[in-house]
Image 1 (cartoon, rainbow, N blue to C red):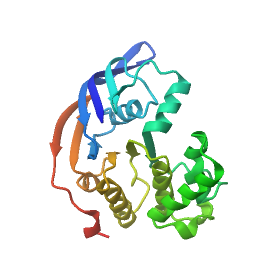
Image 2: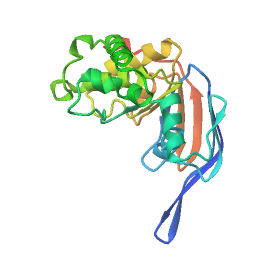
Image 3: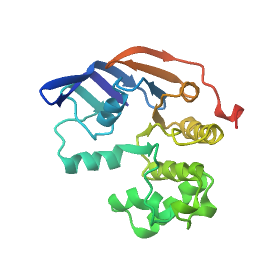
Length: 233
């Protein structure tokens, strides 16, 4: 599903160059649930930005679902993101003046889906995250956990190949974090490929594989026995 080969990325900082990714080799199979861990400055955010087509590597190759991701202009990158990827953010990134249903339907609008189908799909995915009854509520009327569930429904609505979750529990308390991870596990159980960037070890252990980044290289890549979030909910 994802193939990364010899990925390098540097940033110019004044007169200096900061080498952030130093030859990353990284594959993800369809249906995996992978945690990417690393301290601040390890390169995990840069790697996620490249995977999300929000940034480009200086060297190396990135292939997603057998499609080489290279030489994309802004329009093509946006098309590929809509086609291949769903994003879940720590800060939810919901539009405050739109209802839960309108937020979930938004990616479908950019795909040219009809209004009726957008609403039907949005309600379907809100139902899957247990929020069908909150469809007409604004984000300001929702708890943190409910906002993240809306964000997950939005990410799922376009039926992406891969879900990229950037610190999805970072703004939540422990109990709500485990509820969100239980939902992410259920989505993965259905065969969806998910990458979770996290600095929280208990969250990482709820995935099936942990990739440890340190100073721009993969220090360790291990499959683990998954801890089910339902044990803590």
